Image (cartoon, rainbow, N blue to C red; front, side, top):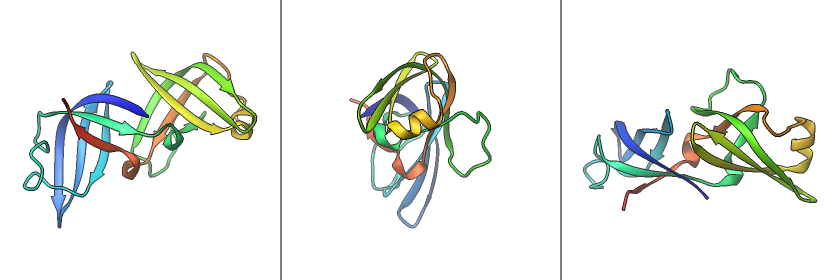
Length: 134
């Protein structure tokens, strides 16, 4: 699981759903939650939260400026690659934050990923969870 500490910088709510903006690791993450500031105490601008997303939800692009609908984009350097028979774990560094991605080995080979490559890590808004910071 990837966990990044951040601070809530924006909240837009409607009919029990909120689009939350969180400043973390020199980027602004977007997350959709089924809560509002009225139903959850931690949803307040300025509050510290944990941004959480699975390694399997981190897509990798060698195109550093794709015209796509994914809002969460992190410019990263590949620190290391661990290839298994079916899956590859890509260890990425964004600023000082380590992010892990698990993709198929076939996709890793197709993209010709190598250590020290600059890539874009992409995470869909609905795959990003938030947790109150302890």
